[in-house]
Length: 383
Image (cartoon, rainbow, N blue to C red; front, side, top):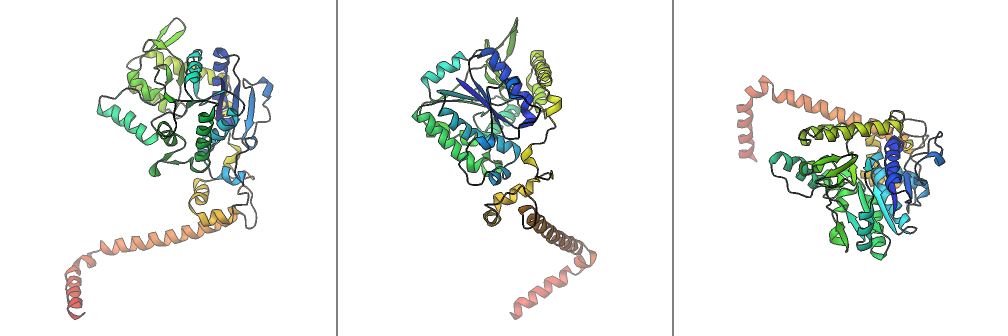
């Protein structure tokens, strides 16, 4: 099996932690890093736990203007959108390809996964495998899965045969255009696309092993224990644990809800914090992604990205341009101009609305209400 993960530089410490855990349990398997960023100058690739680092410009994404495509995505969307092309490319070279999010740690050999890939072409893990039984957990876990995706795309595995490659091409093509965090319109990066996988492709296995992709969203029905140095989940070996939401604090908040007094879960969190710190978390966590700023260092705002996603006329006008550049008639200069005009119009609208509200709430308006009503009746009589 060949493994890959996808990051920008902020996630390098987590990706190192993942890679080291894979090397420990799967020492003969290649581990490839997909980097949607520039490789930091101080990085010596030979000293990294990855067998290969592939940057976004080396993926040969089938689009005409790579800079424009990158610009239109937030950092999270970008690191997700490249997963499809990376999977498609790797399946041309390797028989079995497995994706792990960078905030995953492998705790056991993955022989069981290799055996599954002998039998199946595509493997998913669902967020949930047991129905919830109270309103709180239905809301937090089941309804959340309906919003964000039934399957967790922090992991998937695909075999290089006709069906697997067809799947990878479909997955790649959808992410090229529709890898958006736009839950109101039914999209959440790649996860909602994954919901379609079982109905569109044959020989897809939904892996429900209690030790696979353990995370706070399924701890309501998974009990973690330890015997000597080995962890178990519902008496089965812990295969890999997903430390999702670690930086935001969401992971800890969820543990407080679902730990049920199990201190092992908090010990795992402390262990993980120590591991990523060893791998230079404090250094890299504040790194700005190269693609998050214009070439002069000015940070790109969300509305500057979104304008190109929702205004097709503006996108078409700049379709061949490099939006990261500044200068006369550049996207940046024109957008700032238009933004100032829009802001002035919006400000004028708000002033008018404020004046109308003041008028409608004034004493004189209320006093004259009967007169205005009578005037309306008279107009109807004579019209």
